[in-house]
Image (cartoon, rainbow, N blue to C red; front, top):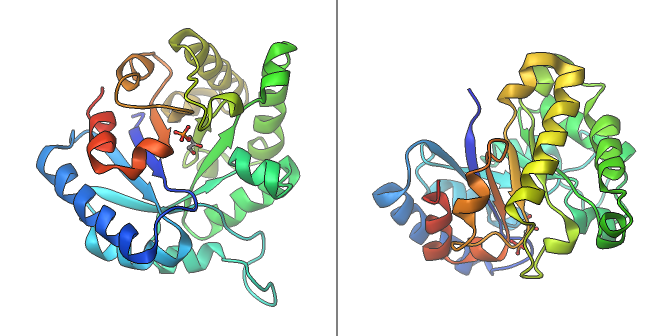
Length: 251
Ligand code: 13P
């Protein structure tokens, strides 16, 4: 069965104490009034993961890293391994976010290695794809997304592929207040599912494909009502418990 997932990407926001306080507040509202059929994920900065994991009810909220290393362990100053995330309580890791691609030069080839490393250490990758504005305006978005999907996911074993969550985040919609229209989101989500189905068959029916990019309490319901939109990856609106819970309950 395809899971409905609402994941909050805190990015580089919140001090340690602010992050723990947000997690406590969010846990309270999710336990009290969160839709039970929605898997809720929060992705705090690395330094907060272990404590956030302690203060939330793990049956209701899972924790994700925002990135992981390509290597298992060793002399890689500043890197955080998949195993470290897992051992701190994370069950998911966001990979391929456009901010990592743009500011840190992450390529599809590198992300293929990271996705496999995450899976090796029992983390569920939330693998992000999406085009920049110029690519959409030039009508190249399907080609860009196809390459992002094929290069990174197509050599996975089927049992590994079945664990992967995909997030479509049009770069022009991230943090801009501009959201993809409901039709634009559905069109790309369907395109992604068809690509995955051509390669992995019926398993693609069970892949959760999340929408990300200025998703908020006002537009979440319309976006999530599309047949191939299985939830959201939320940036700014995940930093306020009241907004985030409304998105969780937007189905
Ligand atoms: P916003 O919701 O702030 O646009 O961010 C989306 C995002 O990048 C989630 O990963």
